[in-house]
Amino acid sequence: MKILVTGGNGQLGMSLRRVAAGVIPSVASVSSGDSLGLWPRNDKENVIPSEASVSHEFIFADITSGPDTVKLDITDREAVMAFVKERGIEAIVNCAAYTNVDKAESDYETAELLNATAVGYLAEAMKAVGGLLVHISTDYVFGKEPYNTPCKEDQKGTPTGVYGLTKLHGEQAIAASGCRAVIIRTAWLYSEYGRNFVKTMLQLTAERPLLKVVFDQVGTPTYAGDLAEAIVKYVLSDEILSALRPRNDKKGVIPSERSEASVSQIEIFHYSNEGVCSWYDFAKMIAEYAGHTSCDIQPCHSEEFPSPVHRPAYSVLDKSKIKETFGLKIPYWTESLRKCIKNLEA
Ligand SMILES: NC(=O)c1ccc[n+]([C@@H]2O[C@H](COP(=O)([O-])OP(=O)(O)OC[C@H]3O[C@@H](n4cnc5c(N)ncnc54)[C@H](OP(=O)(O)O)[C@@H]3O)[C@@H](O)[C@H]2O)c1
Image 1: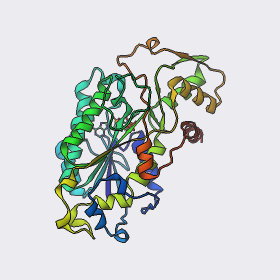
Image 2: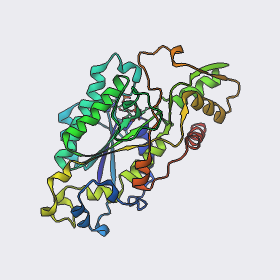
Image 3: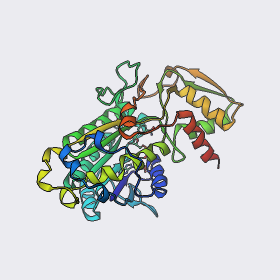
Image 4: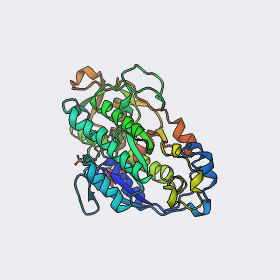
């Protein structure tokens, strides 16, 4: 199975490389795709399990090429369509995005192009070859409504800013395309790679005697390594990918029994680490694990930090569905934070 990872140089893209490199192709720990409902019952019955195992070949692409990265600008529709066709891509994991939440407020067109229009191109390309699009979205599609319980997948999107709005448009572009897709909304992503809150706090708490961090925005951090593992080992499990193969490619499937209706299936899942915290709590734990005891970290209100964007006060994601569907156990946020900091210190 050839899987294209777009945005391969970003935080999640880099984490996926690490997980993919250490993964043995046939991961049997998935509970099965049955509960996903991604294909009709007749189809499932015609998949021969022993022949369903496939090897994964990951191709990492980004706007900038590198030794292990192919150049692919996902805003270039023709380039995306040609790439998928010529390379025989059967699934895409889209990690490319306009992720600068503040800057997006004054750059709507670019954010919309990357977070929505280009996502539509990826969906169109997957639809054309009968492939699967795994798209990463965000907790920031929620927030305008004053929630106080974790957000579920079927809750109405209520973004507070341009970033969340354009990401919501990306989800809608996938729905409009009719391709088979898994959308994973995640939150507060950090990793050993690129720029993120953990790395910024590690630096600031080492340098400054006093730091104020907002305590009126509540959510859940996500270690990109955990999300990458969930994608590679569960969402991209052999069982699910083989069941999603184009019809004439798939051994054990009787073509005449497959219905066109099965081609337009989309599942949305929420994934973050377990638990809930404010950015203040997050910063406190970062400093504690790093041993940065000389910095006095104090809680403050969002108004104290003028920002062009109003961020959600509460965007905790309910992860029941992904856990139940895949039999997935998600680490508590402090455990994963400790792991990431250890890796950064190594
Ligand atoms: N970061 C978070 O806190 C967070 C929270 C919730 C959800 N998410 C979602 O999670 C996903 C992964 O986030 P991340 O933090 O890993 O993002 P990231 O580190 O910003 O990586 C995005 C990658 O996409 C690349 N890119 C930009 N324009 C492109 C184009 N036209 N074609 C192809 N690639 C392009 C970027 O390259 P350049 O750097 O050169 O522009 C970068 O390498 C995104 O969908 C994001 O919306 C992130």
